[in-house]
Length: 110
Image 1 (spheres, one colour):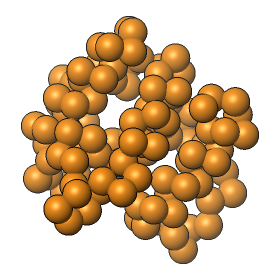
Image 2: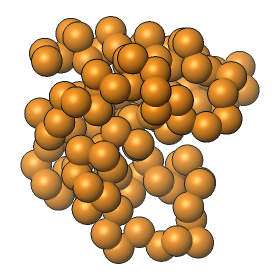
Image 3: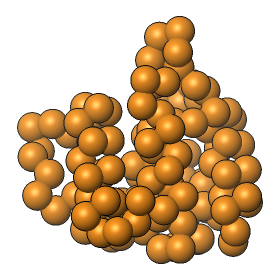
Image 4: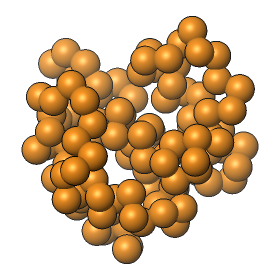
């Protein structure tokens, strides 16, 4: 997979599942995104960073879900990206995003 394909699939998945409350793990785009593996971590981090200020209200970008990027990063790292994450902040998009972006920087991925 290349970055262009990753971005295409990421957008497709986000737009087609925007109103779903749970991850659609059977969606063809999701399956292909997960199969990309670790090569896609920097791309997922980039998409995650692009959600800053664009994830709620009138600024919400339906084509870029921070939830998808976070889920993919976790899948690509077998959850290791969340080591040390305080459970009390689970589900808090801003906190999760900041934690993952700091993790990505510490790993030299962004």
